[in-house]
Image (cartoon, rainbow, N blue to C red):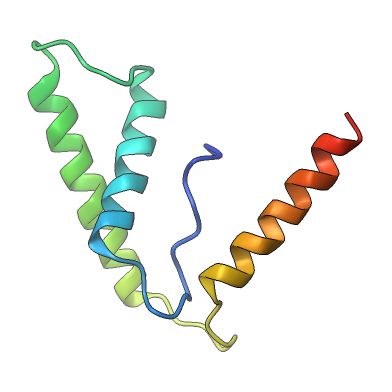
Length: 90
């Protein structure tokens, strides 16, 4: 999975439309192999982003969890701690 795509499920508050859009953009960039499509491919690129974002929102709307919602700040702190440990040993 692309490292820039973050987990969006089971957070309080729920993922925003901007977060879903950013994840869709990262996914399409990864799959297409480009960060900026040519003008000839721009419409297909934009359509793919919109469709991936819509599918993601639909998925998130239908997922359920018995776990308590996660806190973004706590999860970000955990990620920073993992990164510090990972890069300190390199």
